[in-house]
Image (cartoon, rainbow, N blue to C red; front, side):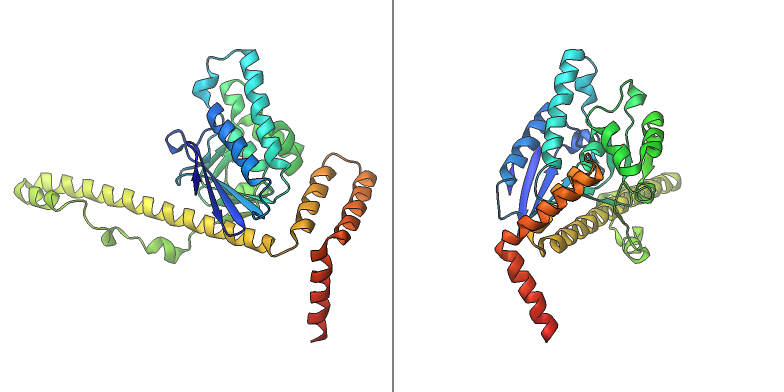
Length: 312
């Protein structure tokens, strides 16, 4: 694993996990995070051994809470333009990377975090995810691509609703409007696997102190202990949900890497170009992309293998 200060890069077979590691700020992206993220993309981009990427956030609370408001609060228009330009440059680089990218959205994906998720090809969210573009609630519009990409993904009417109100939506609603591809949830059996009775008391001293206290003090300690156990249970469930999200994202990435890398990256380019091209231009580009894949040796091998299976 290669680790910078704010970005963790974890190669796993043909898949690399990129993790924003700033949990104390809910993985918000300041100037340093953006610079490290850009360098990380420069590392994985030319690596032919990596066929797919997963981008996520450290911890269980947040994928990315967006831009750094503590930095933005005192800057002037010139600095703001530079900040947005550098952020857009990084997100454009991610969007245009030839490799397929999955956003594993764990928790908050707000503002710049939602914009980061939208430049990924596939978005898989945990059931506790919250997404939105709340910039208008702090006096600015989305500036890292939100007004452009959100309308392309969910349509202009729904994009205007989300941007104008600045509201957060749940993972389920995000799936309903097409903002995420899939929501990962815990089953009732998994939720019941962590009960307060299965979690040990924090210390043995607590019970001995309680025995020496008055009845009311005992009840107070018992109540506090139950609260601690409930909090610990919630933390364990959050970790289990996050693990399930990452397992699902990794499994999804594996399904992609089984296919021709040349065909997948060509398909990504064609779909991205289709967003801005008229239908006739897009169709002609598709023909060129399709024909060029016939020059790649894996195409003939895969076709021959398919035909061989059909004869058995």
